[in-house]
Amino acid sequence: METPDFVALAQPGVRALRAYDPGLDLVALRRAAGAGGLVELGSNENSHGPSPAAREAMLGALVSLHRYPDPLGGDLKRALAAHHGVDVAQIALGNGSHELLMMLAQVFAGTGQEVVASRYGFAVYALAAQAAGATLRLAEPLPAGHAMARGHDLHALLAAVGPATRLVYLANPNNPTGTWFPTLELEAFLTQLPGEVIVVVDEAYLEYATDPALASATGLLGAYPNLVVTRTFSKGYALAALRVGYLLANPALVAVLERVRESFNVNGPGLAACEAALADAAYLDQVRRRNAAEREALHDALRARALAVAASQTNFLLVDFGRDAVSVEAGLVARGVVPRPMAGYGLPTCLRITVGTRDENRRFLQALDEVLA
Ligand SMILES: *Cc1c(COP(=O)(O)O)cnc(C)c1O
Image (tube, rainbow, N blue to C red; front, side, top):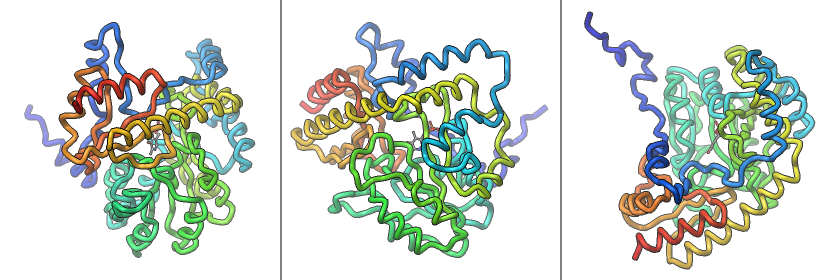
């Protein structure tokens, strides 16, 4: 029997899609790296690791591997509700926030409708819009001379919203630029938007923020029922392998999302670990402080090498080499250091570098100096 043309059989939105590009084959690189080990700075993972309490809670959950997890994630949701000062009915849990970002488009956008995002934004927004069959409209970023160069231009985002717009995705702080905007500016943006346009503020990196002007948008949930805030345990909490994210929104919006949520989308060890991680505020503070110190040192070290580096409130830096960065990337990888190439994001002269531990950053700079020599 002949193999059917499965691309032709796929839904129109999926036909035009390309699968998410995870970067280099890390498994193969790790194998090749040998004793010195690989310095993995490509995926914005948290090199400091999770709270020991989270690790222990996760191990404790292993006695119930034969059981389905709590389909409601009740304990974690109650802990999150207390943490954020919201109602349990305002929270939805996801298999990573990636799943929630996809669900939002699946539920609220479709054929003939539009989704708005910034040109230099997280790749998943485009994926979510296209998979849902919606049209993606990209707003141009802030210009090169601006202090937040290539970051979100909220005026441009507003101008891109039209009668067919159902969803706006924006991350604060932003990936891949690391840039941010003050919470006050978000409020001005929300007041100007029609109430039926859902605004998704992705706060995946908020745990790393140290600028007091950058507070969580969760404080605006009461005033703006069209606001959705997504968070994750993958970055600041260093639990990426467990795949747990959540969103905060109006309870009526959450109730609609719950209709398409897979019943056991968050695993048991993940639920247990996240609850413990959330309770260990001292550990998170320590990670934030360490990251901020390393971020500043790495930023200064790159500037001292006459490289253009955007200011960042995250655990990564966007570095512009002013020329195609392919050879720099190859040179780093050959020396056991893995950055994230940015050509797929439309930034071929840039690499995105995760802020690692002091030792990882030192090894990165050493490799970089060799490559640039
Ligand atoms: C890493 C990241 C996420 C988190 O993804 P998870 O699915 O929760 O691991 C979400 N948004 C942005 C912008 C990210 O960089």
